[in-house]
Image 1 (cartoon, rainbow, N blue to C red):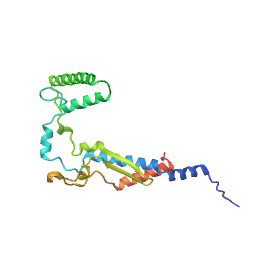
Image 2: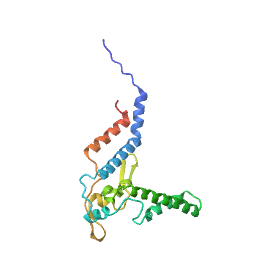
Image 3: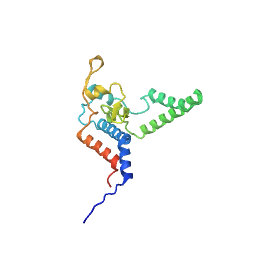
Image 4: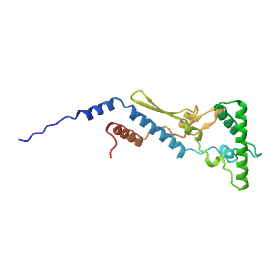
Length: 200
């Protein structure tokens, strides 16, 4: 007579039950994956409507240099440098003195680049339709069943859906927040990996 006897391995089963009861790790991975996908869509801009002609013209005339045509440090750059130095502590006079040294170094570097004939980059060389929104994504795990991915820029929604903004300006639809069937497959795999471990 042939008999089979099944001996239960309790520890692996118990670990599996524990993982299933607390899906937070898997949800965090899914949230991170969906956030990365949204950022990737923005960076690539595939299928996005181009920038308005007026915006393209403006960017083509704007340099990425830290200095102005007159050879001074741009106001925005000065504010950023001085603000960062103030945050480090110390007196205002010390921050001003340190900032002045940095301004001088920036001007000297720009002069050297100009002397070597290095062409200045234009904003049109690096600008993307949704460039300012790329770094504003936030992914969250809500409870034990949901994840959310959102963009914190107030006007990001109108870019995703398209619509009309102040003064009647029309914004074309440039969709970046959506889930594809491939995204769902990846989410399923993340859950399986969290439960059983990645296949070797």
